[in-house]
Image (cartoon, rainbow, N blue to C red):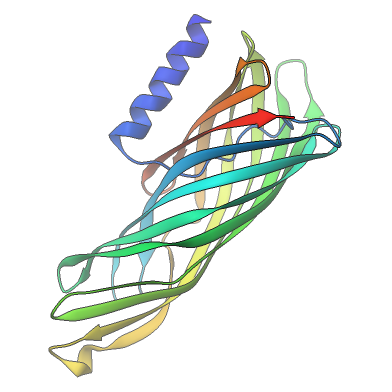
Length: 236
């Protein structure tokens, strides 16, 4: 268990030093076909966004509940529903944008492709949709709307000392509409689509059964910025 605790401490340190982000989890289903689990967690996403006229850091804190359903051996679908805010650095004439919490949802599918002697290999795909956000200062106003995100990746995992350690590369694409209004200079008003500046990242995580039918996950992700996420679920 020393290896498990050491990696858990490392992931916790990375996450609390930088940011939280939504975890993907191992590709192996945590529930059998016809079985389900319910859980909850908290994420903080962080990356660089391109707003056509400028590129800056964006972040999002998410709180959610999640349901997982076993479909086939080692395959499951999951639904995540919660609330998320939105932040953009230096987006309002030098001031930070901070939109309040709005609903969001995620639908995903994951499973194993191959069980190997040293590593198991699987994959996942998920899509999310977010609510609208708005913030303003005396000099400017920014609206964000119709944002969606798609993530897909390969997962390489291994069970060690009763815990599942996993890692892999992933493709990510997030895009949304925006409008910017300069209250001091109407000629500086513009609108368009904002999206992530980079599309390829990597992730590293751990899942273990803390007690009977109670599963805990911690995960660190790297896009342009480092992110972290975690959750707890109960199997029924």
